[in-house]
Image 1 (cartoon, rainbow, N blue to C red):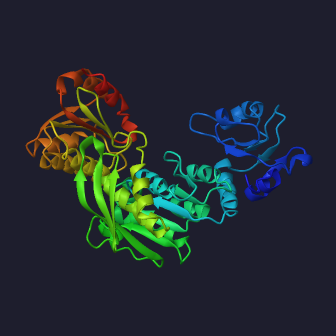
Image 2: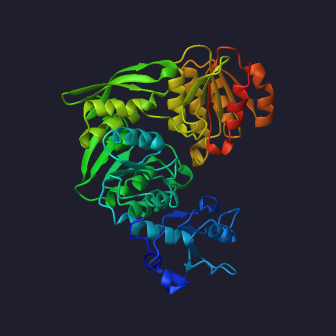
Image 3: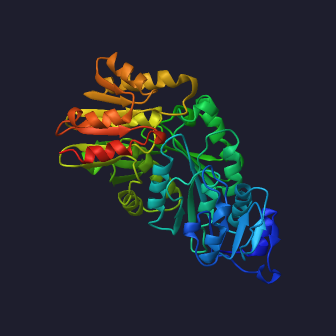
Length: 453
């Protein structure tokens, strides 16, 4: 890692060093917060978590080859140099900002209420046709995840695509101070984290704080299909992507190919790029347009852009669609909010067979939670879904919305009973969407569906 000597780390973190002065010029090879990932030459950052205290694993990290630890109290009985700070997470933020400052490459910050990870993966897939790209792994997008992403930067990287997620006011400003993006991609301003951000205006206000930390010559890519982003003012150059005719980079001739994904033409001025998107869901068209918009601005050819979109791979339980031979399952249970759930239901409506939704609570929606859940049930009825199955106290409002709009629906107060009755609810040939907030752990339902025969 460039410039990451123990001496520089201590200075960047405002920490107090305990250990041999001879080791101050030792360079670390990586930064880890999990002792199981410790390797020779690493810096182990001990974090006090809700269930586990990382300070209890300093000796394990030392045994695995760590050369120094970053911690909140001097370790006892461990012969390992230590940098002691008031707060390890806060120290990692300072250290990440220092490390990022040593790299003069484009940093692309990706944010939005939904679709951040999908857009990040699509943009990285496109840009990797021409550049050596560092991207956020999984959804490491918070005040711990962003530093850990930046610590992966190496001299060979030519661009970084960094996912930046927030749930409360002030977080985006802090993330921007760490990553200092040159470009920003805004996916959707939707109904997420309303428990803290209150409304869409609050969501936009917090997300837009990224612009304050960007250079005036930076570039902002916005989803032109989103009403709030379309009207957002910013001092930087703004490029819109989406399906609306007014978008600078837009998708036309959109076709649904079932489990094979989607196809469309990406249009930008005289350029017309036929692309195949190897993933299920109408929202994938927006992600492809975002990837193309960034790719065009960064000098990629039509062929490189099409190849990058075609190489996209779904991450985890995000619109992963597959046929078990008994049913077609759309596993979208990684997370949920009203925008992503509505998009998933509309995508389900493009599929064949009897359409079934298994839906759970959408969390952190604040005082409008009941109405937002109810509206989702009404939407399912409008989209031609045959059966809605709900589970969870908030999801009961989805059930009410579906029933009151003429749709067959069944509600369960607990997941155990639903799993017991699942074989009697699902028929051969059904196409089943499974979606809920992460806290509902609907992976159990997906696994049960896979076993039906």
